[in-house]
Length: 480
Image (cartoon, rainbow, N blue to C red; front, side, top):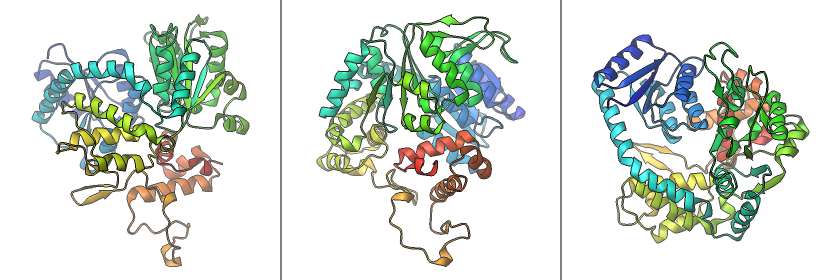
């Protein structure tokens, strides 16, 4: 383990030093950061084999740091340290790709076991991941049967040969990034890098430096020159995922990059020429946003040279069987499981489900089924499409939302003074969702004001709204 590198991120000096000593005893290189912002900066400048981070930290917490790392394409395993009362946040982190979490208090042996398990797993997975990545490269963009998707990918091949900017629209989870990669791999830029940037996951105060880079001394803490994502993608393709979340004050600078094919780093004396193909995705209506003044009209038309729309999975259910077979093979290889067929009842359940989370939800469903299945076939019970019961607690299925429920009219005694229903007999998630949406409604869709009233950051509110969109809720109704 001598050549391994671990980063520990914790605002508690004693906890940070204690974990550092434990790691050093294993003869592993270790760095430390006192907050999420510093941890993010260090992880973007050095390759780590594992990041161990506290969940709760001031300014940028552990989960936010993890989302920022994911947005920049860093795939380092992240394990969270959390108190018993914050387990919910850690579980949410697992759902979006975190490796594991451990509860405070813990012994040094727990950290040692975590490290050994992480390194053993990543080494065992490397060969399987290599195979799956090759499979993804060759097949993932062409897993379809529907006539509409055949048209989409046929058009994508034609589009790929040009240098035109492409705007890919569709609901969250429909496969917009898959289509973008397909365009890149069939283009003249295919030998160059493919750099995907999640514009919604990077804090507003960091997005300019992430996209355009900076010179040494450009601001406090800029100790070295850093290339932005546009320059990192030079010769290849940059994907601006969720382009609708780009702050309005940066849209003019982005427009200049698209028009002039050059970027200007923060603190630079002159711009640098780039040869980068630009693709963008969004699940929002940019035209409506431009009419409202929340997205520049000239940038919208510059991005929308060629527009491609991906339909939701519920409108192309003939693709469900082939996609399921692909994901079964993929996750069986990753988890070293035998490739099992879908039972007749499982396939019927998959094809009758509405998939509010689209292909992404189907992928997670199949991954879970592959891991949990104990029989020769994957059955409908392995899919858990109608809720999961664990230790007496039942979770609601992803398609079930407050706005879809046909509730009886409440008696006056069941309604609070603010118009919200009583919390008795309802889940915390339901109450939270209703509170967020009602607050937005009360402030006429002003997200900054709503976040202030709710006591959360605008970024956290934005992530919650994206979750609700994935569940099929018409969030835009509350943003008018």
